[in-house]
Image 1 (tube, rainbow, N blue to C red):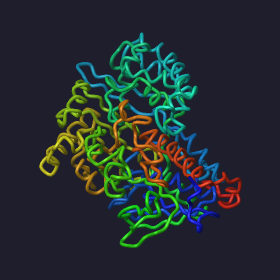
Image 2: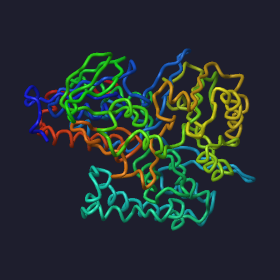
Image 3: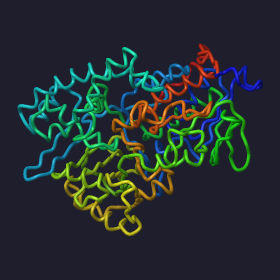
Image 4: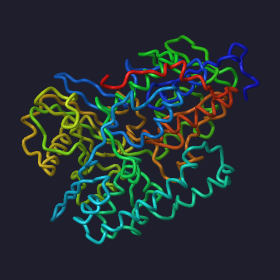
Length: 523
C-alpha cells in the first residue's frame, strides 16, 4: 500500500490522530518513537478523554471514567519501546483488598477480594466453604486460557481466514460461545454468589454473565493474578504521563480542536479538517467514540461494512448514572466497593430491556483514604456508578435525574452510609444523556459496543478501517475491545498496521529521542 504515498512523506510520514484518549495517546507514542511526525487533535482542553482526573470546586479531584489500573504489562512495554520507564512516570499503589463485595439478601455477606490466595479462600468460604477449594483451579484454568488466547487479542482480524492461523485456532477453543460465563464457572464454584464474585465485571462490557461468552473469565483472573492498582493522583496521571512521553518524542498536540471530518483524495485519507482548515497527513488514526464520531467523520461509501444504519442498530453496552460527591469528613469504606443486589439477574434483564432498575446494584470508589491528594484535609471523595440502560432505552433523563439521585443515595445505606446527605459539599451528576451530549459517547453507551460473539474479532470494526486507505481505529470500538489494557493492545495492533502500510521500519533510537534519564518519583 505504501507505493501510492505522496512524495512529501516518503522520508518521514505524517500521522494525524483524532482524540487524545488512551488509545490515541498510546498510538501517538508508538508512532512517534518509530519516526512518524504525529499531530494529535483533541476536542477538549486536556488529554485523557474519559480517562482523566478533574479538579472540582473545593479542591476535590475525581476520575471521570476508569477508576483503577489493571494489567500494567502492556503499558510498561509501550513505555519501554519509547525509551521511557512507566514505573518512573506513574506511581502505582497496589490495593489489598482489591475491592469489597456486599451481597444483599436475608443474610447479607461482605467479601473482601484479596490477591492473597489463602486469604481469598477464607473470604470465599464465607459464601460457601465448599467453593474455597475452587479458587486455585479457577486460577490455574485461566492462566492456561489467557496464555492460549493472547495471540487472538494481540493480532488484527482481517477476515475469516485469520481464524485458520494455528495459534488463533488454539486460542479460540477457549471462546466456547455455547457456554456462558456463569456456566463455565460452575466447574469451580457451586454457589451462585461465588460465581457472581468472579463474573460481575462482564456487566461493564455490556454483557450479562448469564449470556457472556465463557472466555471473559480472564477479566477477574487478571485482577487476582496481576493486581488492581490506584495511580497516585488518579487515573488521569497515566494519561498525563503518556502525553509527557509523547511530547518528548516530538508529538504535537492541538487542544480545543474538534475534527469536523477526515479528508480524502479518492479513497486515500489525506488529512483532517478542523474549523475549516485542512491539515495534511499520510494516515489518520481515529480515537473518537466509534458510534458518535464515525458517521460524521467518514462518508458511508468508504465504510460499507459499517453504514449508519448498522451503527445505529448495533448492540451497545449499558450506560451509567454517575454521582461525584465531595464529602466533609472521612468515609468508612473500602477503596472500591460493589453492592450486588439480591435480584442481580433481574437488574441485568431490566437494563437489557431498557428499564431503569429501582433497586440497582452499584459501584462506589472512596479513593481519598488511599490517596489524600484527592480531597482537602478532613474531607473525602465519593464516586458512584449505577449501571442503567443506554439511550436506546428511550428514557427522559431530564425528568428522571432527581428521582434517581434519591434512589442512588438511598442505596448507599446498604454500604453503611446513613448520614451522607448532610455531609455533601460538592455534587455533580452525569446521566446517559450527559455522556452523549457532553462527552460525545454514542447512545450514552459508556463501555462502547457490546462484546457479544457477533461483535468480536472480525465482526468488530476493524483496526484498518473501511475501504479507505490510511484510516485506522483505536479505542474500545475496535478489536480487541474495551478496557484500558485491551485499548492499549489495540493501539499496538493499529500502529503496526499503519507502519506496515507506510513502509516504516521499527526504530531502535527511541531512547535517544525521549531522553533515557528521567527523575524518579520522589527524587
